[in-house]
Image (cartoon, rainbow, N blue to C red; front, side, top):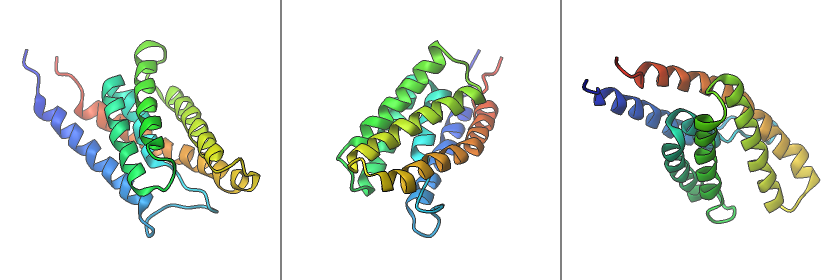
Amino acid sequence: MKKNYMKDYTAYAVCGILFFLLYIIQYSDILSPQAARGFPQFMLIATVFSGMFWKDKSGAIFGFFAGAMVDAVSSDVVCFNTIFMLLCGYLSGVLVEKIVNNNFRAAFIMMLISAVIYYFFKWMILGFDTYIFKTVIFRSVVLTMLFSIPLYGFMFLVNNKLFKQQN
């Protein structure tokens, strides 16, 4: 039985466009959703979900490129985002393959753990300032979790419609 590669390329193109739009939304001053100095980390959401839906190697590759794109515009520690998102994409893919099911509850828990660890390391880099934790870090985790809910639904639909194997 022949596999329809056109559906795979279409799905990758749709997801690639979505991820590029999320990157533009996150780093443009006009479109960036901010609430009281907190902002969601869209590339982290996309990395965790790409690992969940496309398995470990694809998640790691996407995480590497997403992290490199974030590092290109951030003034944090060099390669922090690249390494962290590479690990998030790989680990979320491994967890879905070996331990947990790919459902909303698992996605929400993996996203929460990833966001808390990501922003904890950001807080460590910024010097353990309690004001930054209260005003930026906590709100950013909450916003990341809120935006992960509709993005998981969209990626679930795209994955089910376009990546479905033909029998």
